[in-house]
Image (cartoon, rainbow, N blue to C red; front, side):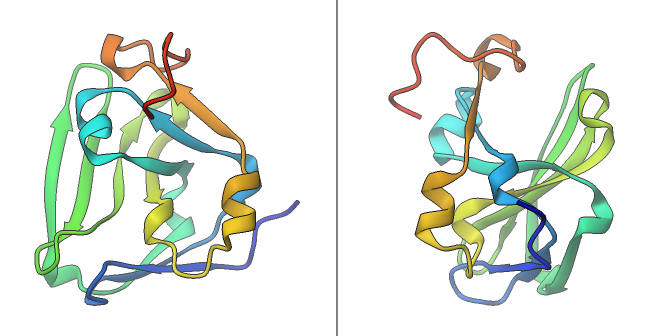
Length: 139
């Protein structure tokens, strides 16, 4: 399947709105690091910055950023309602500058497309991102 022209997404209150050019059937990801676990984070990762456009709410975005020797990632969320919508950062293994989109923030993603999309599990808790953790049922 090819990329849908654009998926549209938003936070809960609608103040932050975006669109993302992606192919949900190329896969999604879930991670077991402490941040993702606490957030129940489920993403489409590795989009190029040009495949993401913030349409509204730039002034309402808050950021939780994390930087290590190997990666840099900023988690973006609406300061008004608290909904996490996307993240951006730099990870050489994903081709450098990238954007990730929370699947729960996509307004026009059908349940059928979501549940049929492959899921990659990442062992972020052990900084072993490219391999699945031993246990994934809680993710």
